Image (cartoon, one colour):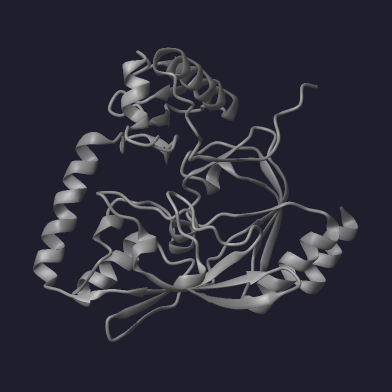
Length: 303
């Protein structure tokens, strides 16, 4: 560990911390410690982080807003990268360029102020631009990939590259970008609109979200991907699991595709509910649910 700390402090200019509890870095409020968390200062620093992690054989995970992620109770034995330094937010005509660390809510507010339409489908989507684009987030019948013109990424050994939309194989809840790449910047193509109308649309979506989703509890958003022609939440509820509880984790009363932290839940509780839902839906509907939730880290060891 002394060697690693020495190398990190020598080579990385941004802030770094060791043995960091990740519960406070995720929307779920769950998870053991990370071996190291790094806040790279710029793209060159980010490349140094990725190269160092590769040299040391450490896995890497990016946490922007920490949504859509469950960290296991034993923590993450690698490097967590926080893209907080990448917060560009600029307009050029009908295009907006946003850094990966920009909050989705801030991007949406900026587009609204500029009277540019096309991103309303991100209303209520938590986290940051990088995470939203990486997972092709969306709702209300659309996905963010529909508006992406270009994505700038950094990869270990290779450095920074800008990929145009034609080279990004967006699909349901996935960008298809190279494994191990880290997004630093995204350019969106929008259209001129009326700020008041955009605001009305966003307000309508927010009201619906707050009525249908368990926003009063900590969660990681949707747990399962919707299977073709159906909804994961409907299948979980039809299997009789609405409100099912293990420890302090619960399948939400409001929405079957959310697992909430009632306070002090452990990753093991959440994963037990995941397996229960998968088994019961398989038995009742013959459907194998796929995780949308990203699970990282290792299980807590018994001592």
